[in-house]
Image 1 (cartoon, one colour):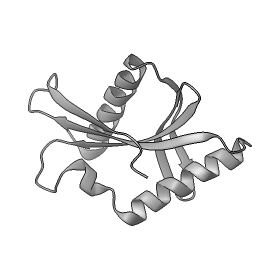
Image 2 (tube, rainbow, N blue to C red):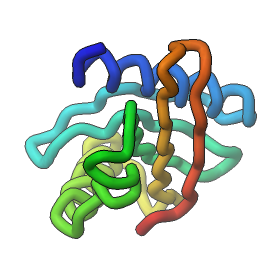
Image 3 (cartoon, one colour):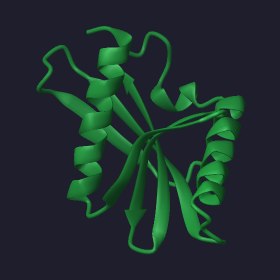
Length: 118
C-alpha cells in the first residue's frame, strides 16, 4: 500500500472510530493555506480537530513523533482559520491525534486516540 493509500485508509478507520464514540463528523480533509485538517468533528459542545497518522511500521518512529512543533503550529493555524472562516466566536475546541498502526493483514490494526495534544 502506498503512502497516500495508507493515509486514506487510516482516515476512514479514524472516522468510523469517532462515529462509534458518538462524535459527529463535520468535514474531512479541510484545506487551508497552512495545511490540512484530516477530520473536523463535534463532540457534544466541543469542536475536535483531528490529525490522523497511519503507520505500517515503526521504522521512522511512532505516530506521535510525526507531530513536530511546526506541524502542530500549522494545525493550530488551520483550526483558527476554520473558526474564523465559519465565523465561530470563542467555541470550545481541542486538537486530537489518532495514531493507527496497520498490521500486515489489512483487517488487523491498532488505534490510539490522544486527546488534546495542544
